[in-house]
Image (cartoon, rainbow, N blue to C red; front, side, top):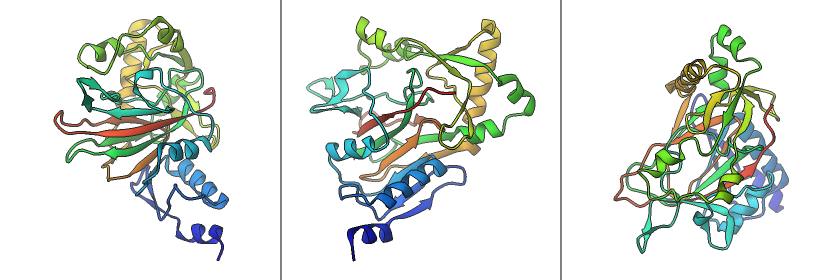
Length: 291
C-alpha cells in the first residue's frame, strides 16, 4: 500500500462544538503530507474555522513548513519574542529566565483577530503547545459568521458599507502599564503598525460568507461617525460578537496544535495562574485585504 493511501485512511476529523471547532486525529505533521490530506485539512478549516491537531511532536522548522503551505508567514512586531533561529515563530509564554520574559506572556488578553491592524490581516494562526500549566491556560474562540447572522436586520442594514480603524497601539500602553511583556516600542516598530481601515463586516475570500470584523483589542472607531455614536456602536458589537452561543473553549492537551481562521473568529486567552508555566509557539499566515 502506498504512503498516500495509508495517510488518507488514517486521517479523521471530528467536530468538537456545535458552532465551530474540530479535532484532527491520526495525522503526524512531521511526516510527508499527501495532497488529498492537505486538501481535506483545508476544507475542514473553512468549515469548522478552528482545527485541533492532536499529538503533534513536531519541530519549529516543521511547524513553519506546514504553515507556509497556506501562504506567506507574517513576523510579529515584537521581535524580542522570536524563537532563536526561527523569526517566523512567536514564543507565547509567561516564563522568565534570568529575570527576563522569554515570550509574550499576555498575548490574547483581549478579544481580537490576529494582525487585524495590518493592511493584509492574518489568514490564520497556528499555536503549538510546548509546556502547559496544570490548570488554566484555556483559549476561547468566537464564531463571527454566526455572530453576523444573528444580528437584527436593522443593525445589519446599519453596518452595510461602514468601515472601522484598527491599530496595534489601541491598548498597548494599557497593557504595558501592568505587564513585563510589553517593551517600549521604537519609532521603527510604530511605523510598522500604522493604523489601517477595514470593513466592519468582511466577506470571507474563500467561502463568500460574511463575518463581523471588529474587536475590543484593536478596533478604535467607526470611520465617519461622531465619537459617541461610534463608541456606542462598537460596544454593542463587541458584546454581541462574543456571546456564549458563539464560543468554543479550548482546553489544551499536551502537544496540541490549534489552527484558527482569523477571517472567521475572534479569540481570547482565558489566563494562566502566575506561578504555573505555559509556553507555546505561534506561526501566523498572511491573508488578503478585507472586502
